[in-house]
Amino acid sequence: MQRLLTVHEVAEVLGTADGFVRQLVAARRIRFLRVGKHLRFPVSAVPEYLAAVTVEPLPSRGRSA
Image 1 (cartoon, rainbow, N blue to C red):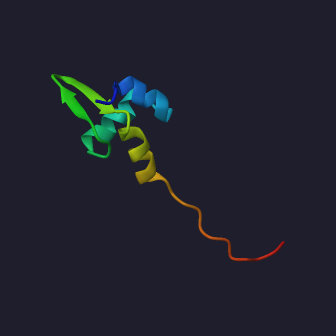
Image 2 (tube, rainbow, N blue to C red):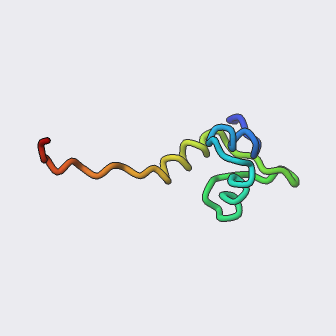
């Protein structure tokens, strides 16, 4: 079984406040578990979330400077 992260640990990895992570949970935008009244996140949930919100750059138009 993989390690589970707390709300605070996920917030630290993302560089955000704990409240932002709770907003992600409320919107079901990140994978999580409820352990009693506590929220826990599989370690793999963070890179999955980052991949889902990553915006790739547009390809170059081939113009030279």
